[in-house]
Each structure stands twice: as structure tokens, then as C-alpha cells.
Length: 153
Image (cartoon, rainbow, N blue to C red; front, side, top):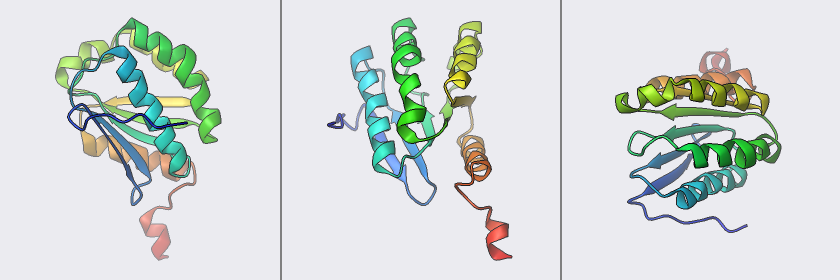
């Protein structure tokens, strides 16, 4: 499978081996086909980096997805992630204040509940440090990362 490429002005994708976290940042709005391609690129990068199941996705510079993308994500993309990566996916979404209404909507609540049935655990944050702390906590719970204190003892 070839990994889609994107202009760095539209989307950046980085794997942080020191953190064991895949970071995707949309730098502008993209049409749905290209937006789908960014998610496919993240899955390919996750597979290439030890089946990384801890993602930080920065949505602050693009609109939250519309119904077409949400349907594709729910029905086609999400169901394949846990099996492709060998376990549940933990995603911290960074959303700005202008996205709060959509992030807290009844439609999003249904999406989040459905995601849990597919071994996908997304949460929304407005602070990147809090999002990273949550991802690190999930790594510890999954036995992927050992807490710093316990390494010293």
C-alpha cells in the first residue's frame, strides 16, 4: 500500500519514537477525499512504526468533519483500525474553542459511543499538554510504557 503524500502546508504527520505517539496536524481545511487520505496515511505510518495505537490529532485549523466524512470514518475506516494495529486505538483530538459546539454535540456523543464498540477511544482536548498526559496514561494502562518512577526502583 502506498502512503499518500500531502503538501506540508496542508497536513503534517510525525511519529515521535521518544513518546511512542503518532501526531497528525491539519494546517488547513481539506476536501473529503484528501481528508480521508490523511487518515489512511496515519494508519500506514502507525503500522510502519510498530503498530502505534496512540495518536494526537490536531483539528484546530480545520473544520470538524461533515456528515460524509463522519459516515466513512464510522462505517469503513474505524472498524479496521483495531485489527490492523493489534489492539484498541487511543486518540486525543485537539479542538479549538470555535469547535466546542460540534465536539460536544449529541451527534458527536453518538460517534464516540460507537467508536468504543470498535475498540477506539477518542477524547477531545483544548490543551496539548493534557492530551499528551492522557495518551501517556493510556500507554501505561496498556503496558506499553513504564512509569518513570518505577524504572528507577
